[in-house]
Image 1 (tube, rainbow, N blue to C red):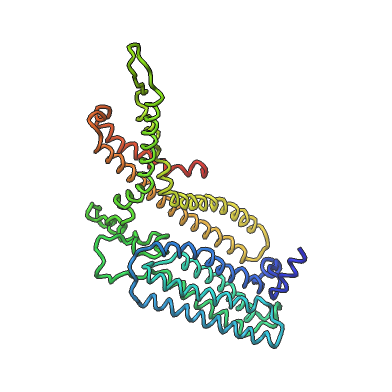
Image 2: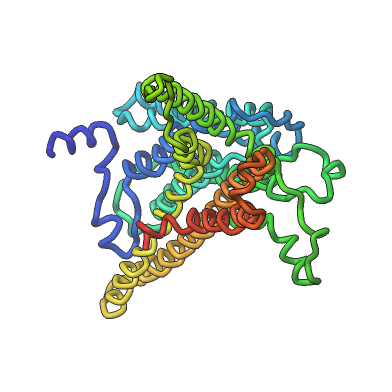
Length: 445
């Protein structure tokens, strides 16, 4: 433990966390080590962890190139200014290193930010070429970096304007200026990433195209894109003509093509296995009758029984498994946060009867608000996503039942009435859809 503490002290300008400076005081601040490692390196680590998944998505994306606009040019200019700022900060720290003792984190942090900003600029250019109008990874990265630099800005203000503040007397004016620029540029970039780029001119957008297809990540998590339909429904009763057209990814033709990649090979494999089983039966079920003739005995329904074992569960999991997994992650996050508010409420009740500083009470209240808001975001996204996945699964099942009904032989039609087939495509598929929506309640309830 002492070895780890010594290593941290050698790498940072101070201890990583100081309970007295942050919690046991009327003027809370962060240590320089916490500011750089947690609040700056945290967003950087988030970017490098999740950007490979986004690049993989971009490789598969087939959207057209996004034209240059004021918004995406402004985003690139902001990132370029961040690169200049981080490079300047890094050079300044290296000059200091030649004159005085500078801890490694002082020049490693601007270097990590410079490399990250270079990668961010590259990803933004790839976004434009691949037609990605809004990036969840970049939005969350700038949001986290804004929070981190805001913590640094707050600490810098306390060290600058509070004369009674006795910690770190050698705090430099250059460091204050740098953190102010970091915060300002991060906040501006965050605001830019609240909006989506335009794939085409507004005049060329079809009137019934769903706004979700051209909405930003922030608009999607808050369902702001649905606002025009809600306003229209408030003004008058909605009709079929008021509905937006289905996006390509929700159209039955597109869904069936994805599902058939796993469904048709399974049918072919099962059918081939059934034929081989019947062939073996012909060879092994040979009997000689009393009159000397050879007879082949095959159990009735052998082939049909084998086909009846065909399961659609595997194709469904292979087609929609990823979407079901992320829906479960959202449900897990929402269920976990449900337990946070009661814990914070206990702390708030204890605060009321204590003599602790007022800022702690505000901290508890704000924490309860953001916890409830985050739970609402996650729950809303879960309900929406799981309904979409269930609807897609129902569409695929209805399609394969309908296609099978079209090719039934006359002999098979005698075993199934039209009403039974219609029930399969309506009632039974609805049950599957309901089960998909309720399955996560088995572990989250």
